Length: 401
Image (cartoon, rainbow, N blue to C red; front, side, top):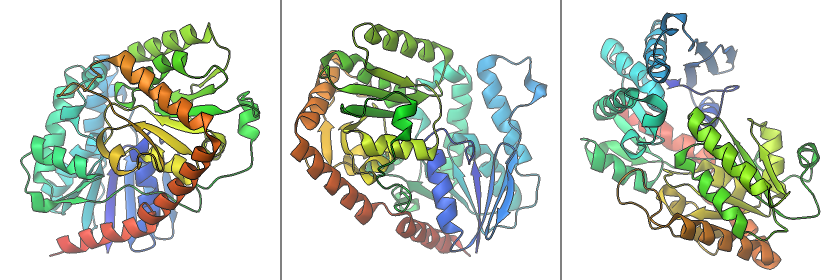
């Protein structure tokens, strides 16, 4: 059997959870079948059953296009180029709207069964209009078209499945919940701490860690607003880059600089770090904080849990299926707007509640250790890529005619 992945992200160009997902799923599936990956970039490799080919995203043709629309035009163009080579796969598997147009063309022109993993859903991310302008209407149309014509859909959590059925015209029998996973041999606590030295993190004092993109969805601004309520001896390490827009990047910059005026232990790593560095940061963190306001799954939480770190996270979306309250971490309730963009009704209360959860875990070493141990055990039992790849293989087999 052979699967063809269409994806925007693939190593070395990974900036979000979907990219992490694709990397590890491709690796595990390649032990079970032939896997071809067509992605955005300049990759060109073949190792065993896994072949990877990148297609250029930047295109001079669109140099005079509106900045916000350029991303959409280049995405559509790249999607066409990804279909130029003949497809000899049994199934095409798309990840995120950036790859969906390529999947639409593959199904229409080559007649290959189409599988889509719903890492997130455009109707629930209206802040994308800040990034794409009217292009958000295009990305929404592409996603809707792809999802409704797909032969099978993978939802990364039960809540995401409910969202798919609510917002799209699809048969429930086509939607299967398959969780994200993690490489348990790679994501494991380490004693190496050279990364802490590099970023001037004090090893004698605890720190709370955030890892993620600078986007409304990830709620980082709410954690920054919570800093004033967090114990002054607790360091804050924000591993955050790739802002959705210049405006949100500036907003983040202003907010961080403001809190840095009153405390000197706020460390902002505003670049993409290596896997080795991130595992070290997870391993030595007292608490990992995930303040997302919309999160279909939240792969970063299982990364932290795998590295024996307690989690304090907002009780939204798929996070509630990952973090067990008062066992592997603390789930912070947040009263949100009923419809997207799901902003907290009372942002200051949410910030205070995040801080209270962080302070509680940091102040209690016994609780912290217990949560860390139970977190690793939960990841081992429920989120191992090996088992997840086999579930995906079974789904593929069910589509073979």
